[in-house]
Image (cartoon, rainbow, N blue to C red; front, side):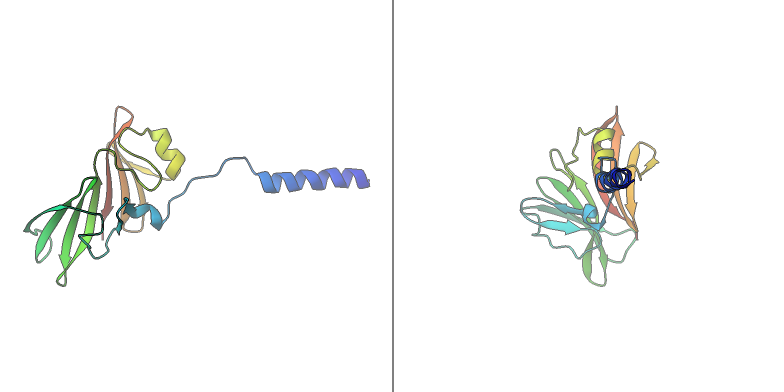
Length: 156
């Protein structure tokens, strides 16, 4: 009887510790922050133009807010801002060329790559695979089963 209980206990311990052998990927607020070698920007944070390195800049009268919408173009991304109370806040971050998300997804990645990195809890909006947390979205445009565009967006 002792030997039988010992075997049962050992099996339960192995199952409890080992699980299925695969982790389930999930998203967190960290997944809505873009970072490059120079710094990082988060959605809906006050814009720091120098955060990601050298940039070019353009602006236009805002259609949705009182003030100017601004676009900061860096070597690896474009950052769109919206004005509020005399300050500019990050609205969109569009990744360019070889830029990668915090989980190494980039232009050319597959849906399997995305699901492995971010999990299965996504929605489809047309050709987009979308992960959402509160008012933040991480969107992957898929054409021919490959990522062709990546965008972080704030929808507050």
